[in-house]
Length: 125
Image 1: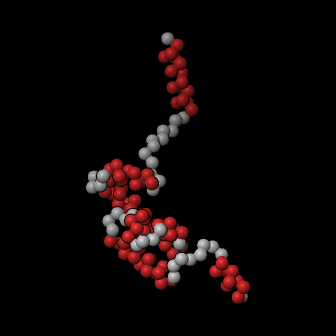
Image 2: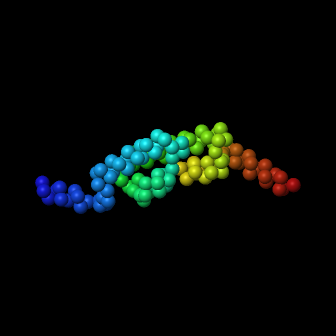
Image 3: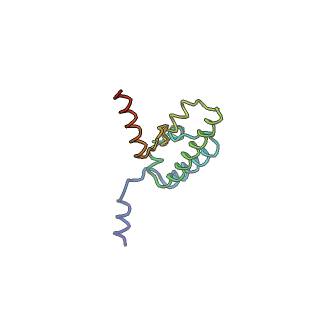
């Protein structure tokens, strides 16, 4: 049993924070999400003097980080629709969250054949 306990501590990324520090960061993150209109991961990390990658890497923060990103996405969409934020910045931020403005058009092969035949007719004249 002692062997397994020792192995568990050696596996994975070494922790750089104590349990108390993790709890403190978690509490600050909850407060930040609740009180910030459009929360930003990089801003929270900067304000709390931590590397933002820690928020993604630590399982203790992953759910809250996802919640922060979800609120950011919802707020950007809502405020963008209401023209309350700079639309260019909103588009840029939403694209970083996976949004696209690419329009996809699905065509049937019969439609494609008609288009090709029409083009051939136009150029054969």
